Length: 156
Image 1: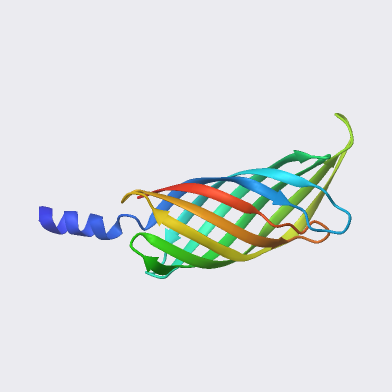
Image 2: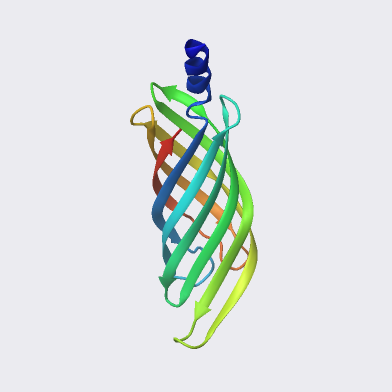
């Protein structure tokens, strides 16, 4: 019975992960020089051996009056390239919010549909930890940008 329980728990192990991302997201709209520093959190679920689902939330710190908040649902197609190393194209949709603050008392906020497409790379540092790098195009009307992120994930 103990062998069956251990086998089942190891098969279930590492189907999920919690992690953090940091990076920068330069805005690519005409005449914009805004680049938000990004801090985010993510939850991952390995649906199949090749498909991983991810929910992430990130905050873009204020630059030139603009700050952001995003909630995204992403799909990663995991391509094994070498031992413990994967490349993955990604796509996702979600909610974006852009806030512009003129001063401490006056600000304006816009809710936006967001769309991600990009590529990532992941290296499994150990059986429970992975490091990743992502480069993506994120569409939001009048605030499209190119997030470049690095992250760490604890898998369980």
